[in-house]
Amino acid sequence: MEEITLKYGCNPNQGRARIYSTKLPFQVLNGNAGYINFLDALNAWQLVKELKNATNTPCATSFKHLSPTSSALASPLSQTELQAYFLQDLDVNASPIATAYARARGADRMSSFGDFIALSDSCDEMTARLIAQEVSDGIIAPHFTQEALNILKTKKNGAYIIIEIDPTFTPPSLEKREVFGITFEQERNEIVLDERVLQDIVTQNKNLPQEAKTDLILSLITLKYTQSNSIVLAHQGQAIGVGAGGQSRIHCTRTACAKADLWHLRKHQKVLELPFLPSLNRPTKDNLIDAYLTHQPAFFDTWQDFFTSKPNHFTQEEQQEYLSKIQGVSLGSDAFFPFVDNLQRAEQSGVSYIAQSGGSKQDTSLIEYCDKHQLLMIFTHCRLFHH
Image 1 (cartoon, rainbow, N blue to C red):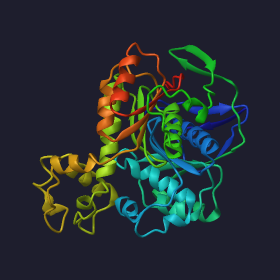
Image 2 (image 1 turned 90 degrees about the horizontal axis):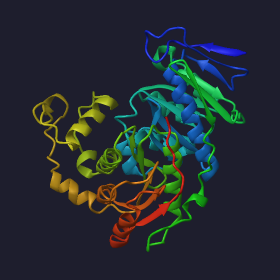
Image 3 (image 1 turned 180 degrees about the vertical axis):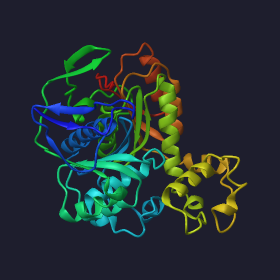
C-alpha cells in the first residue's frame, strides 16, 4: 500500500488526511498538496486525457473547487487575445501546450485565480514561464522538462505543487466513496464522448460544421467533470463560459452565458485600451475589467487610483450592440432542458449549436423554438451528472 499524507482535509481543522492506493499512479515532485488539491488534480487530469483522446490535440484545463473554469485546445492566439490575456511579452504561440493553457486561463480569469492546472502533454519551458506569471496552486501533467521544473519550483516561495502522473494508468471499473459512514459504490462513468453522440440532430437545421462538432465534444467532455447542474458554452476550441453546480438549470445557463459575454467583451477595443497604471498586477486588472464591464457603481469613483486617465464609458447599449453580432457558439448541457427559457437566454449569447440529453416533457416545444430561430439541436441521449 502506498500513501501520501496531506496538508489537511477539506478544511484546516480536518486532520489525519491522506490518500492511498495499492500503487499510486503519480509522483509529487514539489509542494505539499491538500485534499482539495488532489480532487482538482485528478478530475482535471481525466478531463484533459479524455479531451486529447477525442480531438488528437494538446489541451489544458484550469480547475477550481472540483469544476473547470475552462478547458481549451491548443491553437495560436491572435494579437487581440494576447493583449486581452496580458501575454504580449511572451512568445506563447511557439508552444502548442502553452497556447492551450493560455486559452483555458484566459476564458474566465476571475474564476481561474488560484487554479489547479492540468496539461495533456509535457509541460515545457514556455508553459512554465506563462504559469509563473499567474496566481496558481499547482499543476498535474504527464511530464515536465527540466527547464519547466526549474521555473515552477521557485513559484510560491518553493511551495508550488507539481504532480507528474503516469499517462498509461487506468483505474478500476468500480469506484467507491464514503459519506456519513456509509460506503457508496458504482461503475465509473466511462461513456465515450465523440462524434457518435452527435448523430441525433432533432431540428430542421442539420448543418453542423466540423468546428461546431469539435466545440460540442469539448463542451460535453468538460461537463463530464463539472459539478452538476452544469452548462458549458464553447467557441473555436475553447470553453468560454461554464455554469457549474447550480440547482436550477436556467441559473446555470445564465451564469455560463454571462461569462461567455464577458469573454467576448474583454476583446473590445475599449477594454483593450484601458489606461492602467503600469504598477498594477494581473489580478487587479482582472478585477477592474470585471467592474468596468458590469458597471459597478464605485468604478468611476476611484479611477484615479488605477488609471492614468479616466476610462471612457462602455454603455450597456454599446455592449449589447457588440454582442448581437456574435454567432456560431456551441452549448452543451449535462441533462435535458426543462423549459425553453434556457434556449432564449443562450441565443442572446450567440449560441447556434446545442447538445443536450433530451427526455424532457418540453422536448417538442424546444424543437419548435429551435426551428423557428434556425438553431441546431442534438439529443445525445446521455446524462452527464458529476458529483
